[in-house]
Length: 355
Image 1 (cartoon, one colour):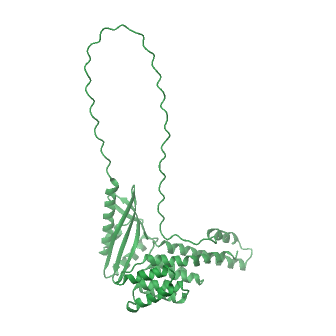
Image 2 (cartoon, rainbow, N blue to C red; image 1 turned 90 degrees about the vertical axis):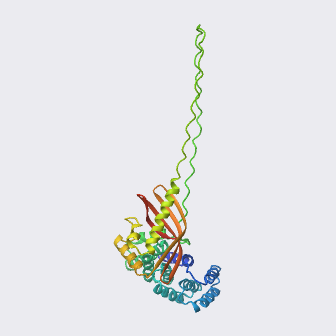
Image 3 (cartoon, rainbow, N blue to C red; image 1 turned 180 degrees about the horizontal axis):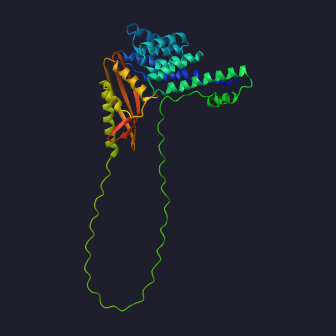
């Protein structure tokens, strides 16, 4: 039973590097020296942490508040095994840019590696509060809760060997096998529907020949008038491309949502969502948090590009690139929305980061 706890701990350790790398790719700070940021990302991807750290420090000497480079520096420190320094870096980022969920997530991973699961849980809850659609944080939080549960069950067995927790430990072992070294970081591409199979042709029954009538003497036939030619069939109207019209409606709704957000028009912003959308909270709490966050900014600019729409009846999946600017913060990332038709409008039913 004691072997269960290391399994879960190993999983958190195994996913750490991937969580850190993916989070880095989801943040793109707009900077005059964006080429330096790309260079550091390439060095990290190649495992050249020392070179990446040196280049990050050179960059930050002149731009000490750049969030993206500070984030990459934290990743470099963590990959080099300099965990206390990485924790300090990510903690400072959460203080300076509390609206970014990725530093909270990476901070939680580092805490989990050290066995500080209560701190990891708190950091992940902050990441989710910042972005209720951050799937990675939810999955990591589930792992942390499982680890805490495992520790509690083990403690119960130490106190009372007759305790009925052995089946629960076995359940955790089933949920978290030892060899589990990957996590889902982006929505999977939808599985294409199988092509319809044409039914096998059925042979038409052979007509039974009618018996030949007996010969009857008939008078000479009267002249028969030629039949009038049959009228040409009316042309079949081509079906209208309803999807194209719906895609235009969806893009229009999307632009109205971005415009309301940019103008800090909260009535227009909330009207872009379905009535049951709540961001993982009660609707009242979600609206209040969004209102506080949006109206606290001096100015906001939300621009969308590269819109791709997949319509299926009254539902649609929309993917696009979002450029967000608020005061001194600039973030560029992919976004995915699940939308549903409501009358002549399309409303947001689900919102998540990532392409």
